Length: 143
Image (tube, rainbow, N blue to C red; front, side, top):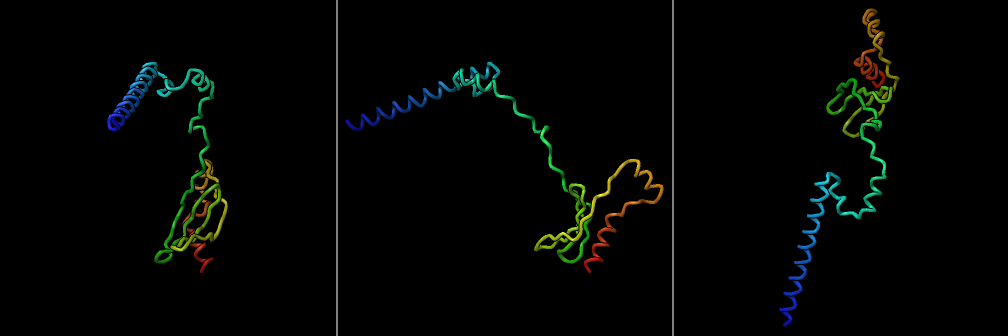
């Protein structure tokens, strides 16, 4: 008798799960045929109206992106040590990089590059200090 009741409970539970799956699949098919949100068919209609009132999400392109760190030059000093000139936020950083850490050796403002200045610099011979000269000057100041 007990075995019969256990088998009957299992059959009823299985029928309930299959019925729920069938119900959910039909609701999802109706909402997909309507062209809306696939989960909208699962929500009550009053709650679905609330989601329509919500303002749309702002696209990721509208958010300002953080500035990129640009490596201007790098020069090896020893086995695993090097000097790196990196630019971020209009400032150039001369960094001493080893396997144990990174140290700021020197900082300076990054030169402003304009098209008119580039043409003038080419005619004069270049007013900006090349990145390799910055690394050489930093090497001399460290030594």
